[in-house]
Length: 423
Image 1 (tube, rainbow, N blue to C red):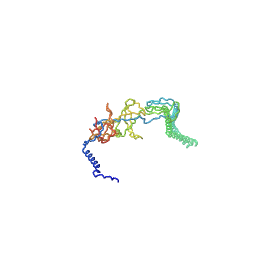
Image 2: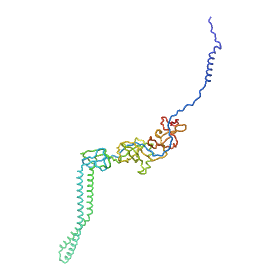
Image 3: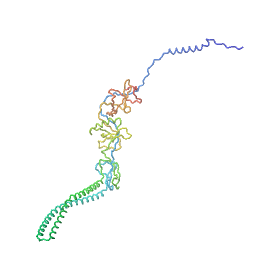
């Protein structure tokens, strides 16, 4: 007979559960009675920056620009006649004063044509002199012919008297009448010649004017055989050679005017309103804005003449055109340089180091608890204190004297960012 297992008693079955409950209770009590550390405030990270207290200044701003010399027009000197190139007196790159001889064409053909034109003019002038002599002779002859006619009329009167008395034949009387009428025709022809004198003289004068014009043209062609500098020029290229046969319109030399050489500099868009206002305020030459630059190590002064009438493709601003005041300067077209344009004096500006500007028109002001506040500004120009680094001159209605702005470039600068000023 098999043995049957004995059942556990009630206390023995609940003992493990009671042990677990007791352990859990002890753990809960230990956690609740543990000492808690005091809560600490989280530290706010602040970026170290330098600052500057704003003080308004009254100063003449300067703009630093980059420009390039250019020639408004390239002049091409061409031949005006058929001739051979006889001699060339200049080379490429030479300077030539106004009126100096650059190139000589063979003048012999032009001289022969001039002699022919002068001979034609002399012939016309001789005909005019002959016409005047003829007119004077007609006037004298008319007087004599009128006297002869008076005598003829007296003869006719006597002949008629004799004919009435039967002392003269009818044929003789008719001959007297015929002589008188022939003389009257001669007088009428002489009067007609005198009347036509102004017309003949006008025709001859017109021929003389035409002949004189041809002489002047031939003289002009002869003078054009000497190719002279039309202004103070520099030779760009020589497009012919000695011995070449030229025709009217053939290019001989290319030059440009040294006195019209100009500098073109682009004005940044943010500075354009200031400069346009200054240019529009130029009443005369004495008030034009001036600029300074170095050309080949020598200081030169320039004058702002005008602003360009259009914005070229690919540019963001308008070009300013400057003329050179110092004629001894020797710039070359295409040469680039930087210049400083001085604007009229202005007040209420703030001078800041370049590191204070973010982008092209923004800086940060310190407000409560040293947090940043973005402020839009307008860059007016630069200031170049002696012995110091250049400073930007800015203007903004939101700024006031005593404000503090940061002069440190922060890569993550944004409005509200906390900073710590380090002097």
